[in-house]
Every structure is written in structure tokens, then in C-alpha cells.
Image 1 (spheres, rainbow, N blue to C red):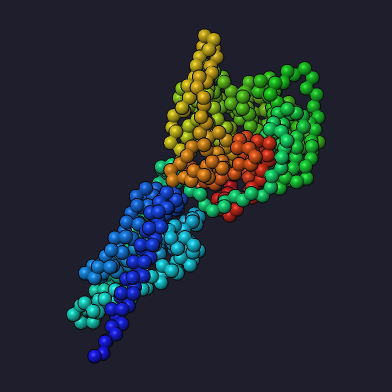
Image 2 (cartoon, rainbow, N blue to C red):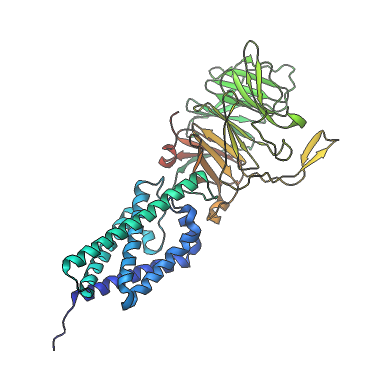
Length: 505
């Protein structure tokens, strides 16, 4: 008696078994390393905001489809479900490769070892297998004419393809909109937007960034304010510049230096005094007279300074713009900084200026907000960092009959450091977001990147600790990131993910 070899049945059985192996292996791999898988989904440029339920839904669906495939009665349903899921995976990878802002890590089982292009080909191969198995299974089970059978099947395949594609596209568009405009505190970490390049030991922790001009980095020192260190972009060609200036009997207390374009500025708001000189000879040649008392000051150009002082009601902080002319003028805008508790500590923050955008930026330390104003001090818009701290978590005590104020509990700065370059705002955040790797946070400082043109969050990246875990200052250029970490001056080279976001204004 001859045994008849049924190719169709064997092929369907084989394809079903392959899908069972694939889905069971992938699902178990995800479940066994669920925390890492959820983090990976949270970093996805398509699924970030839906990570909490998608991380559970995907392995559950994979296991359910595997069960359908092993039960002969439900195998046909399992094949159609396999086709739909593989279409979704394929569309997902296609969007990641061609339309997402960055390409994330893979997620799940053997696929994690593949490149994204190989992953795409792998999925397409399984889509083809699913289609072939469905067509063969249809020929075995149905009794209609061939034309009717194929017409119904192809209509079904087309409808499932359209539905599956549309579902992924809707997820992508919804996730992108929420991530950029209504972020639920989920960070995205694209691979290597900035790579470590060099580091030097400054020996002392009293250095700060004075500025960057003509491809030279300038460092000031609180201990020796008359000396400025000049270096090239990769921390070479070390030069010491001596500021030539006789302070006479000016009672300086806290002198800092700022570099803007071809000028340097010697600043002390407690006197108050601002002097200007040229980078060509490092000589003071002009005093900007008529400046008010201030505790923050940033040069806008050779004649304008934005400053923060405590001239408001009950000494609350206020931003103003000083203009040097034949008759110096001061323009305060008391509405830029908004009081929550005391108007002093709760409005503390970092004062910045984007030379290319001609915008003043103020980033609060203790709440998730930054203020953007034009060069004259008029409000352009208010933005929010992606953390959820809307109200400053500080306690303030009144001393000496209400004439002095002090923190009565330890402060926790949410955004302790910030820097700006052209349209990008870089904020060092200490707040832990959802689906974040604990080890990464323990070993690095997280920098969140915002596009000021669109007032949106872009992504985040780490700066790793050196011998110190204390970040003191940040500075960015078109091509590099500079950080003072303890005694170390560190430089990172900006890669494509960051450089392509820097827009010419």
C-alpha cells in the first residue's frame, strides 16, 4: 500500500510550526526580560507613549496565535492572525528605517541580534510564507470555484494588509504628537547622538565656561578672575590670557568673565559693574555705566545685557535688559518670572541667550518650565520640560523681620544646568522618567534636548561620570559638547542625530 505525500498539508504544517517556534520564542524572551523589553518599547519612536500596555499585549498575542496554530480546528484563523501581526511588524520596521527621528534598538529574542534591514527581510519572508499557507489552506477547505476562492482570499489579504498598516501608522502619528507636545515623561535615547572625544584634568574645581568664539573655548576661574584659559575645539593649544585692568578702589566681590563674539565682559553684580574689552589684546576699554544691581547677567551683544535682579516687590526676582548708549536705559519685564512661593528661590534658574535666534531663555531650577523672550525682554512663549514637577518643591523661611529669606529644607533642583546653541535647548535633568534604565542614570547625567523653533522635546542622551559625579557646567557648539565635571573638562563630538536638528536661523 502506497502512502500518498500531501505537499499542501506538509507545507501548512511546516509553516505553522515555524510561526509557533517564532512567536513562542519571542514571547518568552520578552516575558523573561520584561523590564528591559518595556524600556525598549518605551524608547521606540513609534510606540513610546503606549509602552505600558503594548509591552504586555505583544507577547500575549504572540502566545495566543501560537495556540491557535497548534489546534487544527483554529489553524486557519491562526494563519490569518500571523499574517496580520507580521504585516504590523514589517510596517513598523519600515517606518522606523525611513520616517522616525532615530533608529532604536531591536526588541525580543533572536531578532535582537539582527540589523534592522535584515529584520525587515526576515519579516517579509514570513509574510510570504503566511500568504502561501493561507492560499494552500483555502484550496483544501473550500469547494467554490477557483476564481471565487482566490477572489475572496485576495480581498481578505488586501483588507488585512490595509487594516494592519493603518493601525501601525495611527500608533506612530499619535505617539509622535503626544511625545513632542504632551509628553507623559517618557524619554527617548537614540543610539550615540554624542560620543566621548577627549578629557583633561583641570586640577581645580573653580573653573567655569566663559564662552566660545572663533572656534576657541574660554574658561574663567572664580579664584583668579584676571586669567582666562583659551583652548581649541578638542582641548588642545592651551593658552593663558591675562586681562589688563586696574580695578583701582572698586570693591569687587564675585567677578566673572563672559565672552561674546569678539568681546569679553568683566561682570560683578554686587558692585554693580560691567566692563568690556577686546579679545585681540584682552584690555578693558569701556565701562557699561548705569547698570543696576544684579545676580545674573548675560551679554546679548556689545551694547545690550540681559540680567536678573531682586528689584521686584519683596525683593522678588525680575528679568531686565540693560542698553548702553549715550543715555543708558533699563527695561524690566516683571511678568517674565512667575512667583509660586516666595518669588526668590522658586524663580531661581539658568539665564541663557541664543545668539542665532536672538532669544533670551530662562530655565527654572525647581519646576518644569522655561521662558523664552525676545532681545528686548518681551515674552515669546513659555515651554515645559518633560518632567512632571509643575510646582517648586521647596520651603522658604523668613528671617530678620521679613527682610531676609532662606531655604528651610534641602532643595532638589529638577533642571540644575542648561545650555543653548542656535535652536536647541539642552537641559540637564535629575528627574527619572518612565521606562528608564536605572544603571544608566547611576553612571551618567541625562541631557534632554528641546527644539525652540517648535517648542517641542526631541530626545535625550547621557554624559557619563568621570572621576567625579558632580556636573558643574555645560556648553555646546555646532560640533561639540563641553562639560565641567568636578575637576575634569570633557568634550563629546556631536553625531548626526544632534547635528541635523541644529537649524540655521
